[in-house]
Amino acid sequence: MQDADILIINASELVTCAGPVTGRIGDDLGKLDIIRDGDVAITGGRIVAVGPTDALLSAWRGKETIDAGHRLVSPGFVDAHSHLLFGGDRCCEYEGKVKGRILGANLETGINATIQATRRADDRTLVEQALSDLDEALLYGTTTLEAKTGYGLSRDHELRLLRLTSGLEHEVDILPTFLGAHVLPDEYRNRRDEYVQLVIDMLPDVLPYTRSCDVACDPACFTAAECLRIGRHARELGMTLRVHADQTGDAGGAAVAAALGAASADHLDQSSAEGLRAMAAAGTVGIFFPGVTFHMLEMVPPLTEDGIGAAEKPYMPQSVRRALQAGVVCAISADFNPGSCPSISMQMMMQMAMRLFRLSYAEVWNMSTLNPAVSLGLAADRGSLEPGKRADVLIWNEIDHRRAVNRFGSNRVDTVMKSGRIVVR
Ligand code: NIG
Ligand code: FE
Image (cartoon, rainbow, N blue to C red; front, side):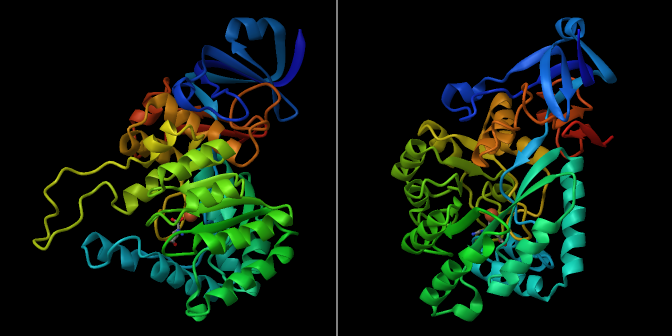
């Protein structure tokens, strides 16, 4: 008999989401590792064994036993893309969008409005809001969250956001990313080169806070050449790249991400087939946002003059399927932000991804756990329930992994364990 700190016993299904540390692709993405009537053994905050109840109980003795009560047990969600710190909200513009008065994603105007609100907000307000949003993320099952700056866009304000993000104390693990190249700030209109140079000059100063740098390669944000310039400087400093790519049009963002050897390229709505193939070859993870598709009404036909809407049938985003077919490691994240996705619930994202992207149960589970962990370089440490990995575990009020996705709109997570410690019950 071996001793463990904790045994979680009696899971109806132990959805381990186990897979290669390079992530699941192709047909393999549609396979989900499930142990029926499963147990997990945990010591020192890490998983030491998983297996069927009989086998595990005959080999392991726990100081503490948690009975899952014949319910579903899974890894915590890994959310690999958020804009956690921002001031205000964008409720005003949203009605205009729904009613057809504001067209498209409105990135430049919208982001600049949030920049003003964020600069005006004091530290305490930003931190309190972020902690409350993190509470919500955790309740819905997120145990790791990447968090970008990008609403400061001056040296002082970007460094302030990095300092505040790094100082957040919360059960959710937070990984800050510098997004100085989010959009051109209003005060630099007609001075693009100056702003790009400012971002490059800021890079050495962000290193104490993060080694992760994001650039937005989009017709509404920065060009491929600008992103390559910033990205190459960041890489020379040893930073890992992430790219907001081709959300409102094909700016060559997927190819830029591949050329930079970026860890991820995110959005990819309008990316070219060559760009996606280059990503697959470079091992750049593609991250998709069902919450953005939903909130930006990208599954709803555009409004016509009569206020009814185009008669053709609603179109479904094809970008995910194209990326999967190109052999890209694909993941889902929330992209929590006030403009394109004011929701931080990965549970909701998984549920919407199945519907909006026409994915299978297995695909959405792997894309919310293991594959986003790959994009953060953390797949050896988390993203699945496997021996050696961190014990970030969810116990659900469901008996079956399909029901956890089939239902939507209410929280089906009952218990959240972070690194072997129960943080939500
Ligand atoms: O990730 N280029 C970036 N776009 C953001 C939008 C953020 C916002 O609207 O404030 C995104 O979706
Ligand atoms: Fe984003």
